[in-house]
Length: 388
Image (cartoon, rainbow, N blue to C red; front, side, top):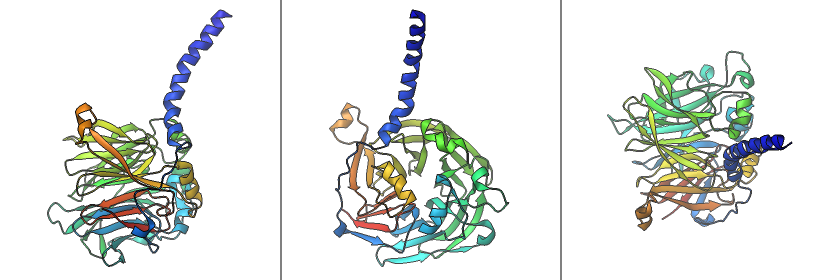
């Protein structure tokens, strides 16, 4: 009997730490004990642009102050959104738009050299990068989570997901298609960070499989997502495997690549190598799950936070259900704490119970003009706030 109990205790001694390792981040990221505090902005300083709905990713063009948005419609998101297991293909309603905060003008960009009828367009992550040769020319890297046209069931084999590369001019109204990048490494891309040559990009795979049990169990494990790299002429590869819930990605001017670990509650930093692989540097923790990332003119990293993930899931089912949001900033610590090893300053600069900006998946700060933009994959409007 003593031997049996000894074996039992030995098993528990192994199992309990393992369970804690896997489940502790999930329990923390569920936000069950988190109390939302409204601060940082007021409704009087914010405007809701209802003409722009369901924009998963927004990107600021710093030189002009224009905002680029990858958008859909609420009805379309409710039917086709493979990342949450929605596979009822609909007519193409997705688009890329610009918004001019000075004039409130919205421009839906026209597609050229792109067969929309046969290729389809279902937008998700996006990056807008000025050309290294001509700053007025912009490359637009766009995740296209398109429906299948080969007759296969997407709920079984997944969406026919690719990355599209377009070019446009700053303030222009046309997207000229340059290349469709399709590769086995592009599995379930969520976001993309492009280069100024119009050919290379990093991207995050939300899952390492398109469908199946992995989509249900991924948050219970630590190895079900990845970071990929592509060159449109030479193909793609997995740059970082075994990543925990990879989501938003952004590349800083100094070459540092930042990736959001959603339920890991942190931003992971990587250094690019000559062979385009990524070397892990460190991770910086925050107190909520995070989604997309952006970097402002001053070099501060912004992350869209989800204080109440269960509310966010309900918001996905019913977009009218309010989902609290917050904005995290990550910056080099120049205070006294840096002397004691606190290299980065992490601040929650804004939080809202969903009344001002509900379900935001991207937060973008225009430091030069004192504006904060927020939008989400099933949000009802773009939120524009005056800050500073």
